[in-house]
Amino acid sequence: MRIKVGLEDNYKLFESLLPKKGTITDIGCGYGFLPYMLSFMSEDRIVIGTDYDEEKIAVADNCFAKTKNLSFFAADATTCDLPKSDAFIMSDILHYLPKLEQEKLIIKCINNLNPGGMILLRDADSSLANRHWGTRYTEFISTNVGFNKTKNKLEFVSSNFIEEIVLKNNFSIQKIDNTKLTSNITYVIKK
Image (cartoon, rainbow, N blue to C red; front, top):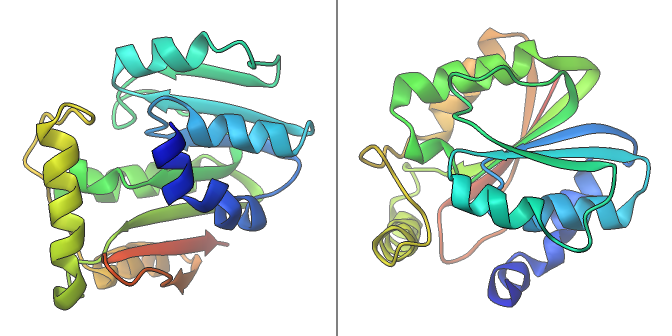
């Protein structure tokens, strides 16, 4: 936990971009580190975490710091019903899905946004060839040591793929590129 939270700089970027009030759903939340941090930062947030890894959800759901504004459920986001939300987070999960499922999930989130809502999406940009090896390496490690489970072959897409989906659905997209060693890009998607 300390390593992950440290690598994420205590989730300062996410905290600065996400609404301080409303329902926030973190798809692929793992052990719930980000949902807990967001709930600590504002009592006016209802934070929902979901992940298909039932073991990770069991850990997240049984933390002593869990409050009534924080909940978790195990499900496959591509097939389950998502709650209406003021923000969706998809951080480092799209590449675990086949390309067609990635598009469907982005559209599913768009369709479940409350008015004025946003999607905060972070994933690798395969078109950044010089830095993409860093992302592939870290994913190789996390999937081969058992930290992350995968049912599919990893499919990394370009930022153009994500931008086309977003613009086709009449949403705006802002890219934040704040990494040096990986191809991870953060996208802020709004109506």
